[in-house]
Structure formats: structure tokens, C-alpha cells
Length: 472
Image 1: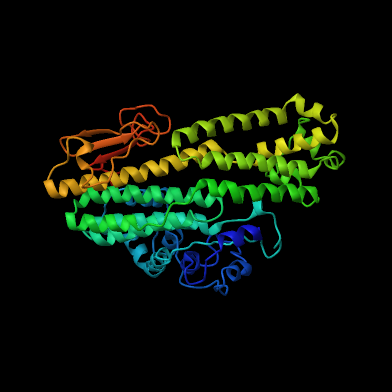
Image 2 (image 1 turned 30 degrees about the horizontal axis):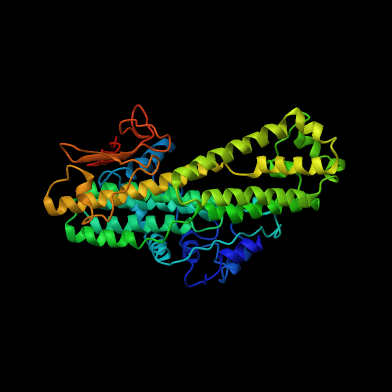
């Protein structure tokens, strides 16, 4: 755990670490309970913050403290959903507007946090178990960051509805920076939450383009701020280091008798005479050569890191699919009758089988993670292209008949579809335009996305952006 902290805290100080200010906004108990231990704050180089303070308060908690709150929880859920999807006014949702005003100081602190260049959220155990396993470390601040992002998205839609274009843009950029920063954390969870936050920000930024039709001068300002976003983290780095260390930590703890198989499998019990159950027996465990386990695991992680760092996305995706198939074979092998036969093969066979079984259990869903990275890259490409189209419209009062007319004045190069390597599908419409990537299934579904009926997998930009849910 400390090795991960040392690597990811390089160059980080209390003054440049966004996480310090994020906790000043969230408070020490972002997920309730006892909150982060004092060690968490000291590892960031600051003193623990007090339990009581004017911290961000979630809508559901705040509204229950108001006179005559809605009794139906679904009403509150519906309100939060709608206010994040379209412009709205205080007259429509007065409770939401009041909640934003009550949280104004905390949200300003979040904005200041995202102006910092670094993000380091230490991985620490609890006060009761300070030297706990890396796999058991909780990340309450990460999920709270997602909630903060949704709050900023809803406030941006309020500001748009009230005609405050620049305030809305400021909140959307705060959210976009937040996503990039959270993704800098060492864990795969932080990376995926960062990607999810960025996706919400991009949707809001496209909606702002649709609702405001900014001038060429304003477009240039927006474009400059987008160019200054922190770099998106690499998923290969997360898997190569933190996920690898997590595996090695579990294996070493099992070797020392500090961790049981059931703890790694979240308490799941085999109960079927499987290898997992057999290896959990003390006598068999003593026959494992843990050096073999560690060396074998490192080979898998080396292969994975090399695959995910290939510059060509389509080549990388093909190799990830093959990697995933090979892991599936390990899963089948570790659960089938061959696994039990390996117990008769002596120490080498038992050790290799233990390594295979742990890899099958601990290696994340690599293919899905790779696709999440691809979607994040393509969504950002789509946003950049939408800005180029908006700049073209601002100068010429119409959209181009083809994307090729945008380069090189409005965008240096027209991006291809990441998933196919082919040109994006673009068409000028009576109201504006539509373009799309066919998405990770590589099937052209005529511009249907997840939100459409019937659903599709295409990553679509429509201008103007279709209206969101109407208020009831």
C-alpha cells in the first residue's frame, strides 16, 4: 500500500493537491460512518479536519430538514434527474435552487480544488486495522466526487435556464477538470469514476453549445479552456501498477496466513469441491510455492500492460480480446475437474494452479475497461469536432456540407471513428447536423444511442441537442 502511495504522491504537496480542498468541501465523512482515519489526512500532509463544519450536504439529506418536505422519495429522485438533463428555472424547481444556494461555499471550494494540478487521495487502512489489505481499502471520497459532479451539472442547467451562460460554462469546466483529476488516482475505480464524470461534463458542454450558440470570440475562449484540461490518465498505468500490487499483496498475505481465499472472493463459498475450496485447506496451502505464483502473475500483468500501451487502438482492442479469452480459459481450468487432478501433481502443479486461480479471480474485466477508455476518447473527439462545427457556424451562419471543410482552420485534422478507423458519419439537417461514431460494437445503428428507442450503441452528437425530460 505504501509503495502505491509513494509513487502516486510524487510531486504532490498540500498546496497543489486537489484532494485536500475536495475534503474541505465534502467533510471527513463523505460516505457517512466514522469517515476517513486521521492517517488519511496526515498522509496528504495536512491536519485532520473536524467532523462538524459547513460541508456539502446532499439534496436528500438537506431537503428532509426543510419545512414540509416531499414525502415521496421518488419525487426527489425525479427532480434531481430532470434538473441535470435540461435547462430549468427557479420557478420550476425552487427547492433545488435553494439547495444550491445553501451549498454555494462548498461548491466554490470544489471549483478551487479543480484549479490545482495534482490529485492524490492516499490509500490507507482503518484506525482499527491500519495495515489492512490493499483490496479492502475504501474510497468514500471518489463516490462523493461523482455526486458533486452531478450537482454541478444540475446547477449548470439552472444557470443556462436563467440565462447565465458563463456561469454555466464555469460549472461545466469545473466538472470536466474534476473528472480528469479524480482519474489521476492510483486505482481503477478512480479512473472509471473520472471517465463517468467527464462523460456527464461533455453532455452538458454540448447542450450549452446548442442552447447559447456562442460567438466566434466566445468559442475561442471556450476552446482555449478545453485545451488546458489536465491530461486524461492512462488505464494501462492503473492496471500495470496498482492492480498488480493489489494482486501481489493478496498473494503475500495468503502466503503468510494473513488472508483467506474467502476474503478475496468477498466471502463467497465454493461448497462444490472446486479448486478454490481445496486450496483454502491448510494442508494444500502449505504446498504452494508462492514465488511461482508471484512470477506467473507478473508475466500476466506485463503482457496486459504492453497490450494496453499499443498506440493503435484497433490493434490494442484485438489483443485485449485475445487476452480476455485466455483469462476465460484460466477460469474454466480453475473450476473444472482438471483443477482437482492438479492437486495430485505435486508442488509445481499446485503452485501453478493457485496462480491461475488467483488471476482468474483478481484480474479485472480488462475488455470492458478497455472499451470504457475507448468511449472516453471518442466522446472527447466528438466534443472537439462539435466545437469546430460551432466555430464554423459562428463565422458563416450555417454548418458545412461535409466535415472536410472544417480543416485546418477550425480543427487541425478531422478525426476518424476510433472504433473502425473510418470517417465519422456526418449529415447536415434542416435544424443543424448529426454525426456519430458506430461505437465499440462496430455496428452502424444509424445514429441510435443508448438514450434512443430502440437503443443503439452509436456515440452520437445532434445539434440542436434533443430536449430532455419535461417537468411534471
